[in-house]
Amino acid sequence: MAWQAVAEAGELQPGQMKRVEAGGRKLLLCHAEGGHYCIDEMCSHEDYSLWFGCLKGRSIKCSLHGSYFSLEDGRPLNEPADCALTTYPVKLEDGRIWVEA
Ligand code: FES
Image 1 (cartoon, rainbow, N blue to C red):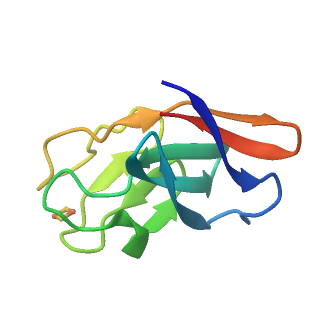
Image 2 (cartoon, rainbow, N blue to C red; image 1 turned 60 degrees about the horizontal axis):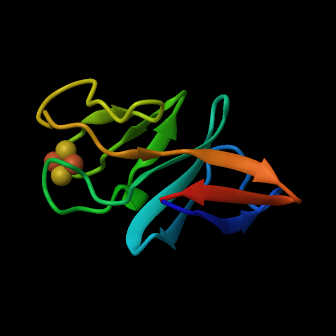
C-alpha cells in the first residue's frame, strides 16, 4: 500500500468523478457530499464501470441495474448488488489529492 497523487486539489467540482489508477488498480475518485472518496471503478454486481453512474449524497448509483453503494464503506444499499466495493483512503496534501492503494 502506497500513497499516490491522483488529482489536483480543486480539480473535481462537487458531483464530479475521475477515473484514476493507483497500486495497479482502476479506481474512481469521487467528489461527493462530505469530501473526496475513492472506490473500485467496476461495480461488484457485474463488470460495469461506475463512472457511468452518478453521485447522490454520500453514495454512488450504478447506471446498469440501479444499485447504490456507500462511498464511505462500499456496501451496497439496495439490490441487485450484494457485495461491497473496496474503498481506499484519501487525503489532501500539498495541493493534491492522494489515494492509498
Ligand atoms: S452492474 Fe452495477 S448494479 Fe448491476
